[in-house]
Image 1 (cartoon, rainbow, N blue to C red):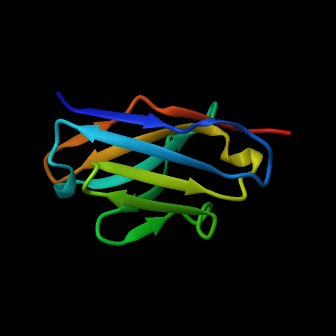
Image 2 (image 1 turned 180 degrees about the vertical axis):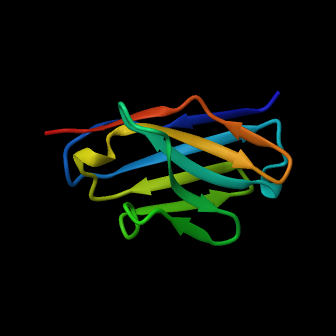
Length: 113
C-alpha cells in the first residue's frame, strides 16, 4: 500500500518559516518525481514545486521556498521562508512517474498575524 505522509504544517505569523516533510512508503522512492501542491480555500489546487534531479518552482514561491529530497529516507522536504497570508493553504505531497500518481492527505499551513 502506497502512503505519502505529510507533516510540519501549522500556524505562523507573516515573515516566519516552516519546513514541511513528506515520507513515502510502498514505492521505490528514487524512481519517482516528487512535488508539492497547495489548495487555498475556494481555489483550485496549484503546483508549488517539483524535484527530480533538479528543483523547479512556481513563480509565486521562487526565492522563498526550497524543495529537497533525501532518497535514503524516502522523504521530500519543503522549506518555506518569508511566509505571507497568501501562502495559507493545505499543502499536498505528490509522487509520480509515467505510470503512477499518488497524493498525500495534506497538511494545513496558516499564515496570520
